[in-house]
Length: 343
Picture 1: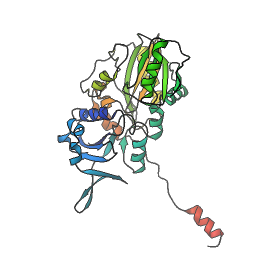
Picture 2 (picture 1 turned 45 degrees about the horizontal axis):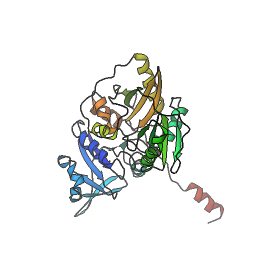
Picture 3 (picture 1 turned 45 degrees about the vertical axis):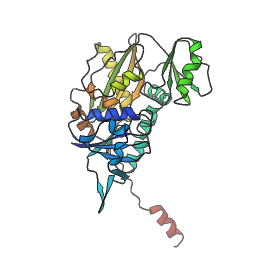
Picture 4 (picture 1 turned 90 degrees about the vertical axis):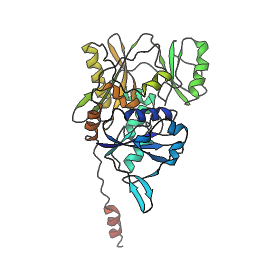
């Protein structure tokens, strides 16, 4: 199996993407081609043997070959023209903007490159927390009550305590728990630093949280269910370490009825929309009811730590990517007009 991992991008989660990409070197049994997208959105080929975090923070990556993205793949300039990078499929591992908002999906689709990752519509829906809520409800999956505020708004209709999240950001960046009104303005200012819109939800202390990852080819392949160990919520520092995880986690102690509900809700979210992706859904459980918290369309380290055989999952998914629609361009309509005009 030969794959390319595309990582970096222009995002608040740029560094996290680098950590995720490096971690896969140790868990994915494949020949990996690393493609780095820097802050100028230029692509570089990084040999697997050389990849390390300091390479990017120091700017040393610029000594490696620059790549051109065009129809059919990524190309490297040579003395005699261009050489195409050889790989069977790419993995979109850009977290946050550029990777999860649909830009990379658009590029790869437009240039005819097979890839693992959310397609354009799935990216847009899962990147925006408001759209995620609406989508989940349409699919029959429960969500907590919510409210959206826009930059300059500092009042909420919700009762405290609440949790505030930038609308289009992951990795717990900009998130605050607000226990009383006196804390509200500061927490909103923090969130508004990262997005002009924020999502507000009730904060329920002690709620159980469960994470499930999966893919669908001929059938669903589910990971184990994890119950994250945390205090009030998984903050940025804990999640940053989470993105470099490669060792398997402990399976949650969960009853069969709740497990069935989680897998059923995951299937409702995934089916006929996230094909071609490995996603992780984070759920809340309150008094036997299951609620979607968020969809992670490109989870940290591809959630490798939730699967017993991560390589086989990626291989299965790579052989079940969505079919490309063949749209013939015949100019039949224009020709018929010209004939009608006698030209």
